[in-house]
Length: 106
Image 1 (cartoon, rainbow, N blue to C red):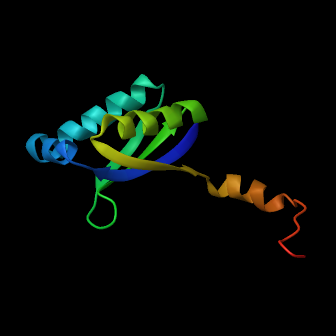
Image 2 (image 1 turned 90 degrees about the vertical axis):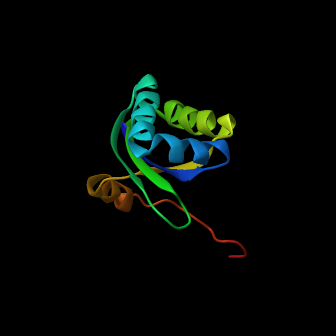
């Protein structure tokens, strides 16, 4: 499984629903959504600033990870994005690669 950081904001009625239900109910709903796609939720946090919440989840494939983003964004209740995460060991493998690149105008 691949690990993803999901982050975003509730908007409109989604924000009203969060204030009505509280964080625990939304955490449970997020976990149920992730599980319905074959994933597992590691954690969820709420913040204040540019983004209102953050979630780390293990997803079985890119399609499932993307489906989660599309499902929430299409609902109109939230605006979310995702970033694929790498472990230190995975980053070690990346660092050992030596691709060929020519910059613009070089």
